[in-house]
Amino acid sequence: MRLIIIGGAGDMGRVACRTTVADPAITSLTVADRDGARAAAVAEELGAKARGIELDITDQNALRAAIADADIVLNTVGPFYLYGRPVLEAALDAGKHYTDIADDWEPTMEMLELDEVARAKGVTAIIGMGASPGMSNLLAAVAYRQLDEVGKLYTVWRGGSGIPKAPSNPDEVKPAAAIEHWIHNLAEPILVWRDGVFQDSEALEELVVDYPGIGAAPVWTCGHPEPITLPRYFPDVKESLNLMFARPGLIAAARAVRDRVRSGELTVPDASKAFILEPGRRGPEAGPVPEFPGVFAYAEGTKAGRPARVAVSTNHMPEGEMGEATCVPTAIAVGMLARGEISATGVFGPEGCVDPLVFFDRLGPFAGDRASLAPLDIRMEAA
Image (cartoon, rainbow, N blue to C red; front, side):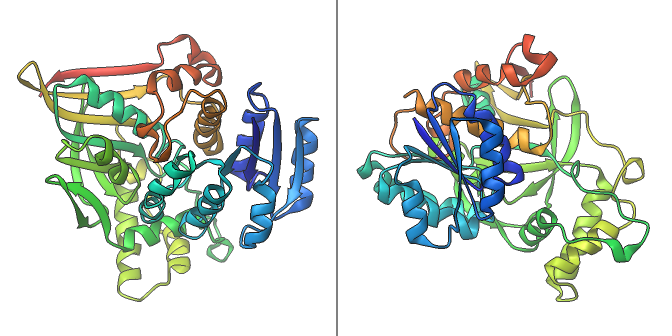
């Protein structure tokens, strides 16, 4: 199948390009980026199967022309509250399959509204197919199936690992889009699934997860797509949250700058800089961090009539940095689409249409020395 990767010359997009171009199911790859020269350079590195084009996705005519010759559209351009729904709408109008790495809960809800349109067009659209969301959703699907009844279904990830050190000269602090995005989300109400309904809530609410075989540790709520999509497919679950574990000092620093944004003292960009400079948020001085896997799912419920809890992680986490963790999963889903292994039509969270066992088996070649291990680590114990 013919694939176009929008934002293909960016940090995330380049990983998606390198991974998908090596898949025999992808017959051609168009690297589309607002920087046409970088797109051409990426395509040249990838070989004869690839070509690069300049594309401004805010130009709807140019966007539609660019995707006209593709079978699958992969969107890696954020922020998705700006560029999620418009690109999906263009793909649906053209009858093209679609996937992305959207990690915001608001545009996730907006894109799910297009489900009937996608079904009418015979299109498969998978939103949030990265690490979290993405792998986390599929781990949650596996965790759900381990229990007879599930009351709580959580997705969990480690926060703070990609945050830079503070420079010795405070004037050298540079804006960080990812941190700005995170602080903005912390300052706003989030949507969670509690008591079997969607409810407004606050980010950074503290809970405790007791990981079988590892132990109990604090975790904090985040606004993320997983609690938006998981209840669509597992509506009997009473509570679904996305949680972050981290060093306590990081959370204290995040709360401090979040509150200064809420009071009007700081803008979000200024809060991003203040957060980088906040003391005690990084390393051992920030306190201990649990020995949890970097991404996992956790469920509580019953098994054979008795209370039980289960945690599921993957041994096949892709080697590399954030780009590999995010876009290798996306590329695997694209390959499954290209092979016809995902045939349901509509707009889905990953857990709604991707077979978790096939997916995690396909991760093996990207896991380095861990490839010989079982794809999944499933741990259960009495609650």
